[in-house]
Length: 172
Image 1 (cartoon, rainbow, N blue to C red):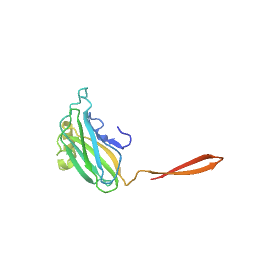
Image 2 (image 1 turned 120 degrees about the horizontal axis):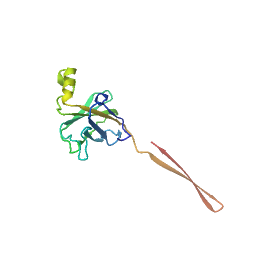
Image 3 (image 1 turned 45 degrees about the vertical axis):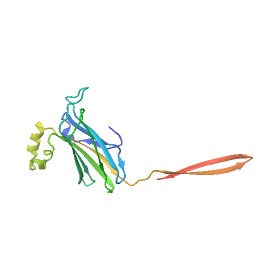
Image 4 (image 1 turned 180 degrees about the vertical axis):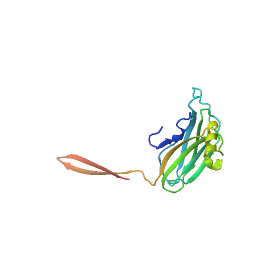
């Protein structure tokens, strides 16, 4: 797992063997950049050298702003032979912190309580036979520029010898 991003698993999924993991290509972006992400779905009870058996289902990737309002939602319906997926999306010009949520489900229309008419028990009963796993990662959108270096050179001649003093500085 990359150390530069803040990544967490839904604590309610901790006893499940089915897991989804996702990450972005970096933790800091400029407005208008394209965010590339990738991840995989894994059934820890079925992991073998040949793969993990999870090749069906949906990964719902949702981007939320700092107020947890949904900005964009992508549905990925094709997983590779190892349960892997990837995608990308373009950022707007809004600065701030964002959450990228990865949710795996066998049915993309049965993931939230709203899909069960706000019946929490019905959703939990459904999850016993149709596992749902969630994972999220954070990233920032900020204006920034590459550091610029300014070398300052002081020349001095003393006793027919040239002395150079270099005093580099930089600013952000």
